[in-house]
Length: 379
Picture 1: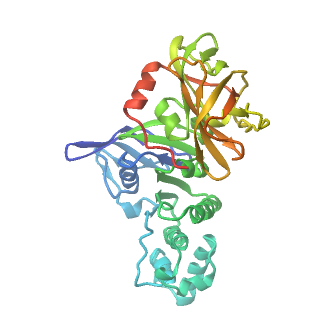
Picture 2 (picture 1 turned 180 degrees about the horizontal axis):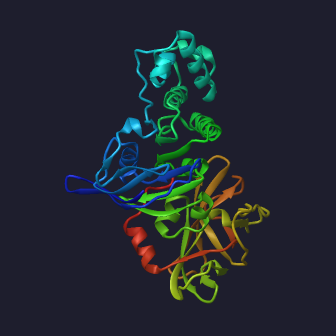
C-alpha cells in the first residue's frame, strides 16, 4: 500500500501509510488502542475504502482512485477478535459456510471431507464438526474461525487481535498453531495487536503504528535492538534510558563508558539499554548472584557502577530491581531484571555491569517520549 489515508468525520485515522508485506510472510502491525490498527485491516479487506492512496494485493490494485474491488473478490480471509462464529450452527456448518459454491451445493460426503480437511489444518479432529461453538474453549473457537476463513483458499489472511480474549497459556498455544497452519498453507498474513510479546513472537516483519502514522518497519530483532526512536524502544520492551555525553563511538553515563551504535550525535544526549544487558552482583556478603546478559545483545562494554536497591518487584522466575546509583548526578535511578529471587531485598548494595552496545537518542527525543508515552509494558 502506498500513500493510504482515511478520515472519519473531521478525525484523521490513518495518514500516508506505506507498507509492503512480503508474499508468504507474517507481518504484525503493533500499536496502542486507537492507533488505527483495525481500520487499516478493514481497508485491506475492502470493508472500508481509503480516501487517498493505493492498495495492491498480489500485483492487483484493489483500492485506488476509480478502483474499488469488492471485499469478497479480493481473495482475502478475515478473522475477528471474537471469531464471530454463528452460535446456532455446528462447527461443521460454520466451516462449510466458508466453502465455495461448488462444494456448498455438492454432496454431503464432499462437504464433510472438505470440513474434516480444514479441521485437520487447524489441529482439530473430525469429531469437532458436530459440536456447537458454546461447547468449545476460546482457543478452539478461534481455530474454527480460522478454518472457516481458510475454506475460501485465500491468498492473504487478516487477523484482528484474534488471541486477545484468551488466557496467557491458551493464547500462546493457539498462536503457535495458527502460525504453523498459515506457514504450511503459504498464506501471506497480516496480524494487528497491542500485545508487544505476541507481536515479536508471531512476526517475520514488524511495523509500529502510532496515532495513525506508520513508524519503523523491520524484523522483530531489528526493532528491539535497533529502535529508530524512544517510542519504539519503550513500546517493544522495557528500556533503561540514561542521560549521556556522546563522543566518538562511546557514551559517558552513570553506568560508566559504553560503546554506542554508529550515530551522528555528539555532546548531551541519552542512551538506551535493555534491562537484560545489565548484570547484577550483590555486594552485601551474599555471594555473586548475577544474571547473564542477552546473547543477542551486540558487542561488549565495560561500564559498571555501584548502587542501592530501592524497590523489588516480583515476577515469578525473576525480579525487577529499582536501583539508585551512587554519586550519579541527580541520583540516577535504573530498573533492571534479576533472575533468581534469593538474597535480593530493599537496601541491598549491588554492582551493575553493562554488556552490549547502547543506542543513542537526542535529548529532545527523551523529552518527547515522556510527553507522549506508550502504555506500560505487560509482564
